[in-house]
Length: 135
Length: 316
Image (cartoon, each protein chain N blue to C red):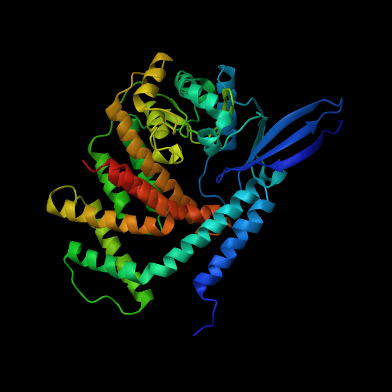
C-alpha cells in the first residue's frame, strides 16, 4: 500500500492550492479555467470516495429493472464495464419505446432518477439539492 | 499601404466553443478602433461558419438591432490559423452571475426582461428569405421545425455520445410524442440567453453569439431562454433568472413578437435542456478526441444537471 498522504488528501492539497493561491493570482480566462480545474478536483475526490458503493447500488437497481439478477463482478473495472453494458441495454429498450407507459415506465424512471441523482452527488451536489428543495 | 498597429491584444473570458480576442487597431492617422476578433479554436467539434455568422450580424445591425457592427471576415486558415471575423468592441459586462447578483446591476435586472423581449421580437422580424441569408439552415419542406430540430439533434447525439444516457433517451421519446405544429417561420437566434448579451448597469447593449442561428419556430428562442442553466442559480425567476414566464411572454407579444403558445414554449424548453445536454456531450467528446481544455472536460459532467431537469419537466 501507499504511504500517507492518501489520494483524497493529496487531491485536497492541490485543490486548495489552486483555489487559494492560483485563482487570486490570475485574471480573465486563465482565472476562470483555474477555478474550473479546482472544481474538477473536487469532483474526482467525491467520485473516488463513493464509486464502488455507488456502482454496486446501480447494479442492483439495474438487475431489478431489467429482471436479470446475477452477482456483480468482483473487480471494480469489470463492475464499471458491466454497469455500462446494462445501462446501454436499458437505453436501447427506452429507445424502442418499451418504457413509454405502464409499470416498466415507472420502474425505469425511478432507476434513472436515482442514477442521475448519484451522478449529481459527485458532479454538482448543490444542483441536486436545489432541485429537491424546490419540489 | 500604411501599416495598422495592433495594441492591447487580450483574450476575453468565456466562449468554450469560440475564442474571442479584444484589441485596439491604431490606424495610420492615429485614430484608434476598439475591435473584437472571433475565431474558431483548432480541432473543435461544433461546426459552424464564421462567414455565415458575420453576414447575419451585418444584417441584424442593418435592421437596427442592438448587435456589434461586423467589420470584416477571413476564412483562409493560413492567415491566423483558423477562420475569424472582426467586429466592433462593445464595452460592458457579459457575466451572467454579475448581472443576477451584483447590486450595481439592479437597474439592468429591472429593465432587461422588456429589453430582451424587444430584442427577440426584432430578431424574429428579420426577413428569413432575404437574398443574403440563404445559407441559414432551414427545416426540410413538409416537416415541422420542431420535428426537424429533434431529428437533427438526435443524429448529432448518436454520432458523438461516449456513454449510454437513459435520461436523454426518455427525453427523446417524450419530445417525439407532440412536437409543436408549424407556425410562420422566422430567423431563430439559436442561443439567445443571459450570458450571450453585453449589458451595462442601465441594461442591454448588444446581442452576441449568432453561430447557431437558423430558420424555424420563433418560440424555440423563447423556450431556450427558459432553460434552467440560463438562470445561473436564480431558479425562482424561470426566464433567465430575471422574471416569470407570463411577464416575458406578454412583453414579447407587446414588442411585436408572435403569439406565444405556452404549451409550445414548454416543448421547446424541454428540447432546450436536451440540446444543452447534447452540446455538453459534444464538448466532452471534443476533449476526449484531443482538444486540451479543462473546461471542455468539465462540461461532460454537467450533462447530469440537464438529465435531472428533463426528468422533472417530463414527470407528468
